[in-house]
Amino acid sequence: MQTQYFIGTRGGEDSGITFENAVLSPSASYGGLYTLKKLPKFSEDEIKEFSELSYEELTRIILNKLGLNIPRELLHEALSLYENFDDKTCPAPMYLMTPYLSVQKLYCGPTRAFKDMALQPFGVLFSGFLHNNRNAHNYLILVATSGDTGPATLQSFANKPNIKVVCIYPHNATSDVQRLQMTTVNADNIAVFGIHGNFDDAQNALKAMLKDSKFNAILRSKNTSLSAANSVNFGRIAFQIIYHIYASLQIHKINGEKVHTIVPSGNFGNALGAFYAKLMGFPIERIWIASNANNILTEFIDTGVYDISHKTLQKTYSPAMDILKSSNIERMLFALFDSYRTREFMESLESTGKYTLSKEELIWVQNYFSATSCNDDFCLKTIKAYAKKGYIIDPHTACGIKAYETIQAKYPNAKCVLCSTAEWTKFAPTLAKALDLGDLSDKEALETIAQTYRTLIPEQITALFNQEEIHKKVIQKEELFDSILQWL
Ligand SMILES: *Cc1c(COP(=O)(O)O)cnc(C)c1O
Image: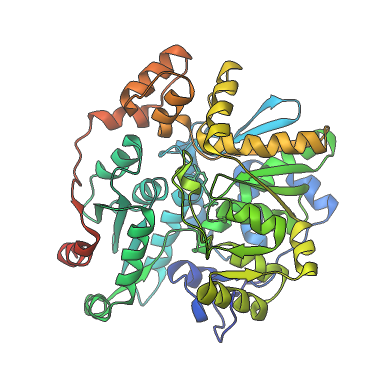
């Protein structure tokens, strides 16, 4: 396959940007994101052949067909990390919950959320590209997390040479398990700070720093570039296409049907992977975006209006989806419309907090996507109802059940794949509440639920409670700048 060159979603002069370039330096002109210029489209026959491949073979072929030019050895090393997942042969296994609903477990990696699916191989690629690069110098990766991206990024980059990671999280707004997954990581190249405030405060403090001239001068003097490990980085999206393809092929090969793919969504990175899979011709009928009370994506897909000007972020039991500005929508708009139109939308969002699709554009988006949202009450009731049937699901996955019920009502024979984005063990106190076990700490909730429902807690989670918290600093957001400089 020919080399894929990446282009900016908002246009600009960037040319000759390879996958490697886009991974190391993910921001494009005019504040846009690097994205694929062209997608391969596969025939029925090719798709049939792909459905016989192992997960690893499928990954190799698709990434190759996308023209990403990842050196063979490097990709091999990156994918070998999947061997540490629960099922050595498949990092994203599926099980049948009902004849119409397959659940894809995307949380079988070290931090028990779907972020590992991409961030595990991503860390290896990033380091590999860095060391192949003749202008090699140092990279600083800044991460603001609401609880899942932080742990997965730290796992991926701990002890990697020439890379430093600063991770900040909102203090008292993550679960104990999520906090421990960050504060116990023992590596010299990472720093973790709790911030007094919410996720937006953490994110805004980082953004302010990125614009600061003193900070940038210091980075230059240390021969250090900034990069990102969130889903604005296409390196993550690449790996998030594969499991959607895999799931659709597993179902299609049994009965020849196309699947409805349900994706609990926040920043739209996971859903974007499904969208690319569909554009390439894989048997996906429709992509269902599941949101919580922060239903900006549902509103957008239902009405064509993306309007955050009157919204404030609500805290919910599914915190990884508590988001108003969903970055990867931009890549979807680019793929359906063009860079000129995308730039118009994004500039309107920045200046007025809002943009509106034309009627025709909305119909186009609705050819691919539907959306549902649910409140916390539905989420808790669903967790309880499924636990009674013997399935312990996390709050994000529970929001996806709302989409499943909506599909069932409309298309009773449809086959659905629900992306289960986290293991319940990351949100045990919420589960305890849902299951009428009371207000418990993470540790108490984990033990009580495991006993009551005869389910196992993975070693990665139990071990956390016996480890020392190394990164204990909790600071005001005004102190962040100095704390980071001091550490650097
Ligand atoms: C990150 C995350 C999501 C949202 O994924 P996006 O790609 O940002 O849409 C959903 N559920 C869980 C558990 C997550 O960690």
